[in-house]
Length: 209
Image (cartoon, rainbow, N blue to C red; front, side, top):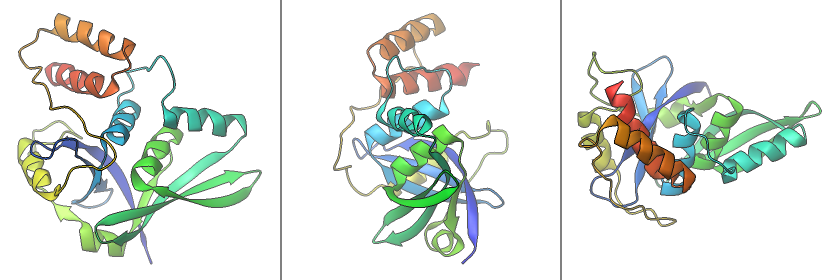
């Protein structure tokens, strides 16, 4: 079976299903997107890894794993989303230590959070993309790797239930705050280790830059 490399396009928060997020993966040489429903904690961890300007004062769980792996010279080489059963994606982390390769089973959200920290590529099989991939309407002038309102609406329909592991509070509208207020709120959120809030504030600041 042929592998297809994926890029992370972004994370969409469900406006109707509290605490549910859709991680959007995009095929590198195509137009299809692979939406994966993930929990709030995993969404927060992935958002922190994507947003280089937010530095947690203490390591998150996936950062701790990265530090542990570095200490023992374990390298994550790649992540493969290898199976889809009843809407649930299954993934493998391909690791290497002392030139020996090991395959570790993992939840897809955890695998991707680690792939980001190791700069490891993410793959899936063409058969999975053929089955679960969707085409999302895009806006040519939109910033790269930003999710449009039309795409958010489509993704919201794909999220069919609340995440069972964690529930996030309703999203706050930060559009009415000044940049100075937003930067102060960002610093406070990072200090309080509220990284989900910090990521949302950083998104609003990025929109204005």
